[in-house]
Amino acid sequence: MSNFREKGFAERRAAATDAVAARLAKFHAKPGPDDPAVLAREAEKREIREARKIREAQRAAAKLEQIAREGAERAEREAVLEIERIAAEEAKAAEQAAKGATLAELAARVIADEAARKAARDKRYAARKANRK
Image 1 (cartoon, rainbow, N blue to C red):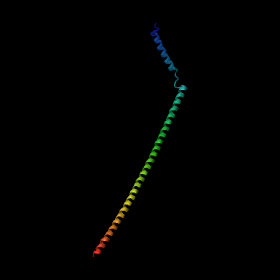
Image 2: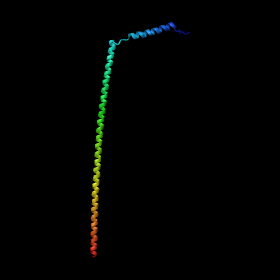
Image 3: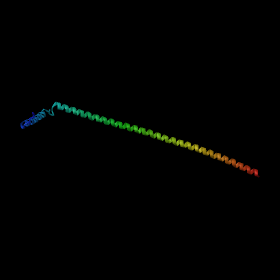
Image 4: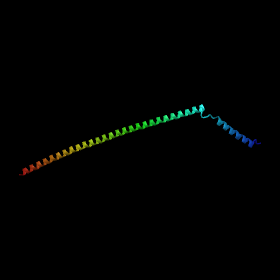
């Protein structure tokens, strides 16, 4: 019924020997370090590494340039904001000075009106006293 057959010791040993021989053949078939193909691959890898280093340096330089540009823009924005703040403070001070001048003028007018009323009242009192005599 079943066609299954177990491998014997000799077959397993032969298979292991064949596997070891195949690995050795693969290792021996590998080119040596002085082979032109290996040297060409190493040169290509070296060029790739050098190109990568150059690109990394360029990226770093671009990033530093970007950071410097952003710093300059931020400083410019802060300077503009500071100028606007100072201008707003000066405008507020001028407005308060104008308001103070207006209030001083109004106070002077009120004092002058009060003095005129007092003078008129004193004149009336003096006229009344003069009429009694």
